[in-house]
Length: 174
Length: 421
Image 1 (cartoon, rainbow over the protein chains, first blue to last red):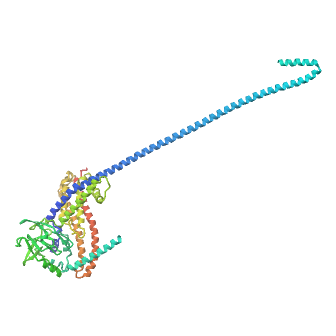
Image 2 (spheres, rainbow over the protein chains, first blue to last red; image 1 turned 180 degrees about the vertical axis):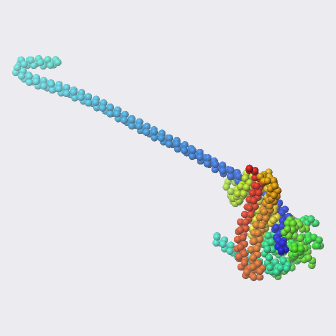
Image 3 (spheres, rainbow over the protein chains, first blue to last red; image 1 turned 120 degrees about the vertical axis):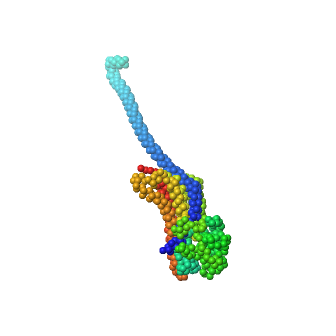
C-alpha cells in the first residue's frame, strides 16, 4: 500500500542526513583523539602499572613470608639444639656434683675412720699405760703389803728380815 | 528520609499525571489539520512519535525553544548561515513565522521553499504573531504548514499571499528509498542531535581528563570518587571485551573500543534524561553509520595477511568453491558494519518511540482530550508503563553500547589474528 511508504516518509531518523553524518565524524573524531591521548591511554597505562605493582608487591610479600618461615624453622632447630645442649650440661653438672659429693663422703668417711682408729689406738695405748700403771701400783701395793707383812714377820725374825731386805734391794736394782 | 522520598515521588507522579492530562485537553485542536482528509480529531501516535524522535533545528526543553545555528548549503545559491531564532518560533510545534533567505522552520526543522516558485529572498513575515496567539487563546491553534501527496510523495506546503508554496526537505542519502533523496539544499546545521553530541563529547572529555589526572596524581593508590565510579566500567571493558578478543594486541585497540563504548553509552543515556530534550542521537542512522564506518575502517586497515588470505583465498578450499565463497566473504565484510548500524539505531529508536507512544495513549484513549476522565485514567497507567520502559531503556543503553563494542572487538580480533596452523 502507498500508505506504508507515506508512513515511512515521516520516519526521518532512517534517512542518512549529510549534516549529521559530517558532524558525527567530527565529534567522534575529536572524542577518539582527545580521549585516547589524554584519558584512555593514560588510564590504561596507570592501571597496568598499578596492576604490575600490586602483583609484584604480592609476590614479594609471599617470598618474604617463605623466607620468614625458613628462618623460623631454622630458629626452632637452633633453639631445640640449645635446649638439648643445656639439658646435657645440666645432666653433666648434676653427675659431677653427685660424684664430688660421693667422693667427699668417701673421704670424710675415711678420715673419720682414721680419726676413730687413731683415737682407738690412743685409747688402747692409754688403757695399756693405765693398766701398766695399775699393774705397777698394784705390784707395789702388793710388795708394800708383802713388805709390811714380811717386815712384821721379820721383826719377829731378824734373820728373815735381813734376807728380805736383801731381796728388796735386789728388786730395786732391777 | 525514605518516607519523605516516597511522598515526594507520589507528588511528582500526580503532578506529571495532571500535566499530561491537561496537555491532552489543551491539545484538543492541537494536531487537527496536520493530515488533510483524515478525521481532524484523530490523534496519530505514530506521526507524533516520528516527530519527537527526529532531529530538529531548535532545541526544545519543555515550553522553551533554544535557537541553534543553521548552516545551510544550496548548490544554486551557496551558504546561508544564521541562527534559527531568525525564524521566530511560535507555539510548541516549532513553527517559525518568518522565512529567511527562502528557508522556513517547519515543525522544528528547516525546509527550503522549492526554488523557482518566485518566493522573495530575505526575511519575510509568513503570518502575524498576534493572529497566531489570538487563535491559540481561542483554543484552535493555527497551523501554517500543511502536507499533501504529490505523486505518492508527502510534500509540505504553506500559503502566502494567497499562493501555495511547496517545500523541500533537506537532502538525505537514502536515494529515495525511505522517501528522502537529494533535494535543492543540504543542512549542515548544528542541530539538536549535533549539539547533544558535542555537549556529551565535551562533558565526557572533561570527566575523563579529570579521572586520568586523578590516576596521575594518586599513582599507586586505590581509586577514589569519580575515579572509583569509572574504573569498574573501564576495567570491565578492558578485561571482558578487549583482552579476550584481541589477545596481546589489546593495548593498541583499547582506546578505540573505549571511545566507542563511552561515546555510545554517553549518548544513549543523554537521550534519556527526562525534560532535557531527549535527543535521539544514537537512534539516528546517520550517527550509527558513522560509528560503524569507523569500525569498518579500523578493522580493514589493521587486517593482516591472514585476514585477507581468508577473505580471498580461504586456505584448504578447492579453487572452484572459492568462486562462491569469496563473494560471500566480501559481502560479510560489508554486512558487519551494516548490522552494527541497524542494531544500535533500531534499539534506541524503538525505545524512544515506545516512550512517546505510551504517553500518546493518553491522547488516543482520551480522544485528544474530549473525555477528560479517560485522559486522567490513562495517564496513570501510561506513566507507570513509561517508567517501566525507562528502566528497561536504561539497561538497553548499557547493553547496546556493550554489544557494539564487543562486536567491534571481535571483528578487529578476527582481522589481526595470527595464523595458527
